[in-house]
Image (cartoon, rainbow over all chains, first blue to last red; front, side, top):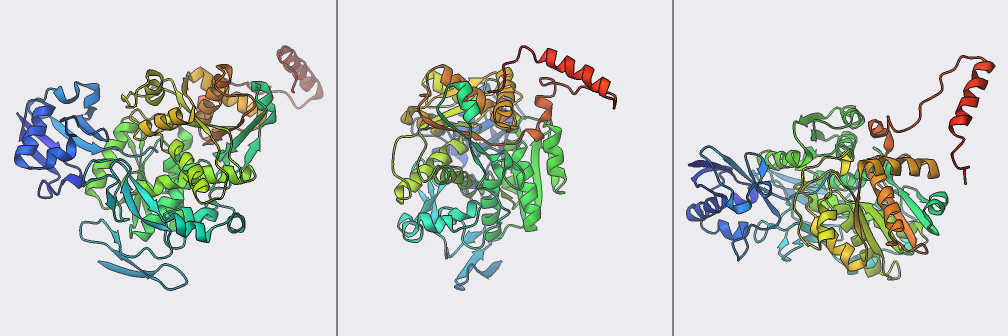
Length: 91
Length: 450
């Protein structure tokens, strides 16, 4: 279950400046754990102390906001692309 | 690369260091009154570079930190009144160091709307008309003037934005004036007026097959890859400060006093929060006497995530997929929505949504009563103003200001099938006479003009 994850610039300090990484996971929660396993410390930036994604972060699976899917329980399939995008102002 | 310049007449050196990552840092904040950036959520401090989120702690939005003692020592009502008739009369409250890009933005009319007030049953109503803002007829000229001034100071040569239309117009126009390269992104279904009103300045225009939230996501990824200054992404802390001037101007134009109630459109929620910040700052430095001001927000039902959260008593936003004619405020995932809800709650205001039909009626009502032709966002504001009065949520005796943020000539499609048509006649008196009789018959049931 290879998942491609797009890492925003502020988090690339954890990923050795890699903007895109490939991980094995079957859900968003699993993906967050996999990220932490490979890049220790990154989960604390992404999630609060209860393990919930921070409210100013948006996650997308193949361009769909996970809040329109199943939030952190969203199931991932082989080849899915997950984007991590900090919230931005309007236009 | 190390760029050395001089920020002001005192020849204070301004050092803008641009590392190979493309993220410039400012070493010296010379004449400015701002001291850096700070996370709005956790307070973590940052240098005043090109960044917009709390990347070290919580990903909250960053905001500019000012030295209000310095501002207080430099500014008075008299110094402001002696300044240019643009947003730069308030430059001590804006996050720039040197000479601003001044294209005449701001100081738009505050119109006493007596006819509309009478129609609605209000005693004191004003329209803040940014539909005639310069150079591109929307409030976005305020935020872009600030953002591009800061972009230039930070060493960017290419600027960009994700836009629902008005921001694209403004970024392209002011970038042209400043001689900056420009690439802007819009949803591909925007109104023709907003597309042409961007292309005329000859930027690179990307029409993305998706809604605004998808455009924004793409731009965040582009911003990660290209070393550009995105006004609403990595320049967001500076950009958003420009909206404060809508607060300052209303205070000054009311004769250095605060209104009782304001109504403004809500898209991302940023404008709403910055009007409040503008009021608070003038109170803080002693330019206006403190008093309560109620803040009410307007959304279109087809994209009303903030109104829905407000109605449900939630302090968090559940994103929606937009489906409304009010494209300029169709942001389904509003970043500043929680802050807007907080302000409405704390001030005793309200947040309401109206249908597309009510929005068109709002556009027509403002035009017919006050001679102001606004776009759909303004129609939303007027329709919500009307609704809140009818619901008893605006006291008729309050001095109320409705913010009109854009010009109707950009979105004529929205009202094309909802207004009258011309009488086509022959160049003969008899033909006119016949048409005039017909026009009077069709207007017969209408109420006489007040």
